[in-house]
Length: 147
Image 1 (cartoon, rainbow, N blue to C red):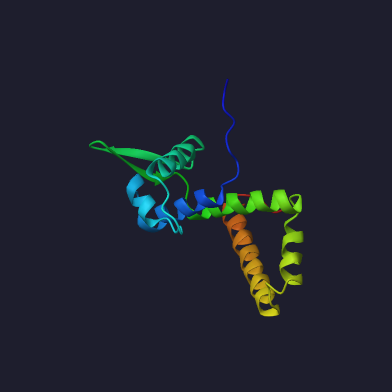
Image 2 (cartoon, rainbow, N blue to C red):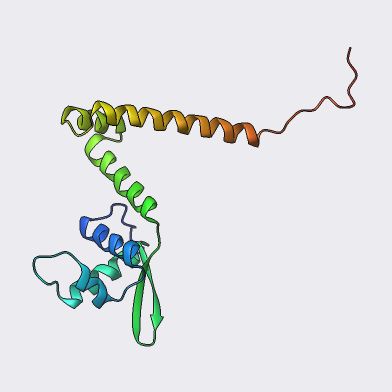
């Protein structure tokens, strides 16, 4: 029986990924020491977490003598995108505009923030248009007769 892949990233998994992105590949002990917790998590709990993350294709490990050193399989941007996509899907039925409206209604986005986002969207549109222009083959009229 094949195991289903986990789509969402839990809060604890995201904490571990942040540690790996910030500090590079780490052993279970190093992750355990760096995890921000009020109480120490047992070694086996952190090991189990990393093993689950490996099964979910979030991390992989390299073997250094007898020690496993874990590293992320996705970038910070990919992890953030995955987490946000899951959040929008779960809480806003996939409608990102509802999330943005919620941020505005709860005063999480100011008018200046919105203007900044609009400017970024315009820049993105220009960059996309430029990339499309560059990708299109140019037609030449060399060698053609005018009628």
